[in-house]
Amino acid sequence: MSAAVLKIENLHVSVGGTPILKGVNLTIRQGEVHALMGPNGSGKSTLAYVLAGHPKYDVTEGTITLDGQDILELDPSERARLGMFLAFQYPVTIPGVKVADFLRHAVTNVRNPERKEGENLMPMREFRTELRETMNALNMDHDFARRYLNEGFSGGEKKRMEILQLAMLKPRFAFLDETDSGLDSDAVRVVSEGLAKLSGEHMGVLIITHHERLLEYNVPNFTHVMLAGRIVETGDAALAHELHEQGYAGVRERHPQIAAEEKVEQPVGAGA
Ligand SMILES: Nc1ncnc2c1ncn2[C@@H]1O[C@H](COP(=O)(O)OP(=O)(O)OP(=O)(O)O)[C@@H](O)[C@H]1O
Ligand SMILES: [Mg+2]
Image 1: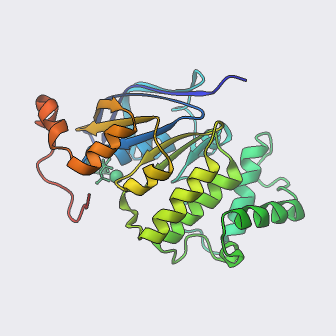
Image 2: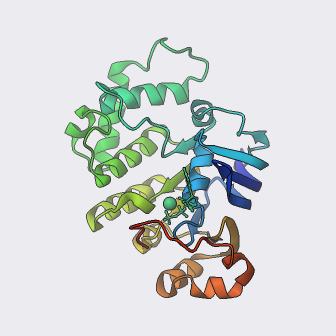
């Protein structure tokens, strides 16, 4: 079977009438690792939210297709069934739902697309065995599965949850936005190692990160730089390294007209 292709073409996105993305083009094949970098406020998370199908973001122009199928028409759970992993696909907290319950539903949804809401879930025994093996492989404490989903989760625990979901769902494409997570170095290691173990020829990954460590473990085949809602440069892993060392001044100098469109105000407390 040939590798699946996710294609973003001329994507324009607005929030509350304000244009944020202004013509993004990006193609990701299964098995490739892409890094998306760019200064605060350039539109990286916006792209991740649009891929996830967040209703607040209006696509005003352009397309996103998976092997030619328009995915913008699909709701988040339909996208998940096509093998897209969306870091935002779970509600923030669902009272009374434990991590294991949530995963059992999510895995059933992805693996049995024909199943109707409320019909039989993946058998408990089979699910438990798979969950236990997966958590062992990721060195995760089994108690974690008994916690209530996202309730009181620290930033690092949310990221562990993401990695556990990735491991259970085995998506064809994963989009990971690390920006606002404020991960300590242990958590960065967990995510970096976890992702490196999981990605491979079957997964295309888009990593949005300001952490160099994540890209050391998951060396990008392509690095893209976003500026004021456009991808202005694409290179390899060396470009990511250069940006970590030198920041974005050089990128702005090379694209003065686009840099002039950047909002002067930076979000409060937005760290690089
Ligand atoms: N829901 C929203 N309401 C209003 N403005 C928004 C919304 N979402 C994004 N924006 C604006 O869109 C621009 C891009 O934001 P986005 O979060 O995509 O940037 P980013 O590249 O992820 O930045 P960072 O590196 O700080 O995470 C910013 O100016 C932001 O204020
Ligand atoms: Mg962001």
